[in-house]
Amino acid sequence: MVEPRRSGTGKGRGQTFGLLLTIVAACILSVTYVDIRALALSEEGTGGPMVADFTLKTVEGGIFRLSEHRGKVVIVDIMMVSCQACRYQSENLSMLQDTFSGTGEGDRPVIVSIDIFDYDTDGMLFEYKNETGGQWPHAIDSYDEAQLSLMPETIDPAVMVSLPVVKVIDRDGRLFADFVGVTPASTLVGTVRAAQ
Image 1: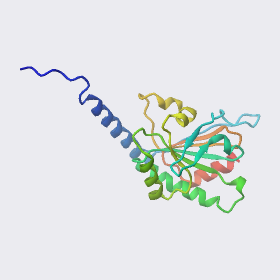
Image 2 (image 1 turned 90 degrees about the vertical axis):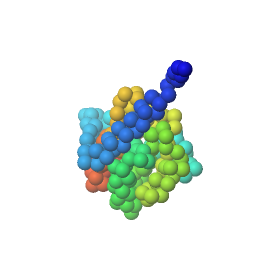
Image 3 (image 1 turned 135 degrees about the vertical axis):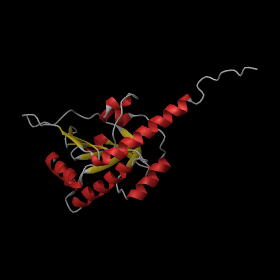
Image 4 (image 1 turned 135 degrees about the horizontal axis):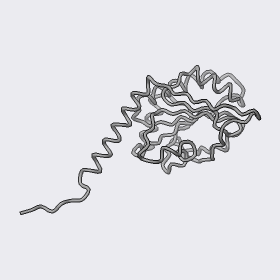
């Protein structure tokens, strides 16, 4: 007796698992690689392109809306829970936060970590936050709203992105700098000062 063929059996799971392994490998490799693409300021003194507003529900129970932080430098940490390099980046963000802790409210950068991996949950991200000691909002980009605003090229599943990615947005809401891979705290501190 011939068994009927089942369409889609196993292939989708195999592709998903392969994609997951590729993402994890890219995160591990990015620990030793930092690609810095600071955006040049034009002669008029304006930064890079304006970053479209986005709103995310945080795992702490709040709402993070980019436009509410206009007038401050915003650090957007794009990550995923299973990325070891992202954990190292979180340590650097903690050092950045400590560096500016004694400064005036207007000089302190706003930090937000955004998980872009579809299979991570709020519970997983909350546990990650507790493990890494991040004292800033963490959110899952469930509907790709932040990703469309900050990294539209990565919405295409054929495009591979190395994580972590840090986007620095200046006080006017313009993209000031773009870092791929683990970025040293000293580089982040210098970039925040330049963006102010």
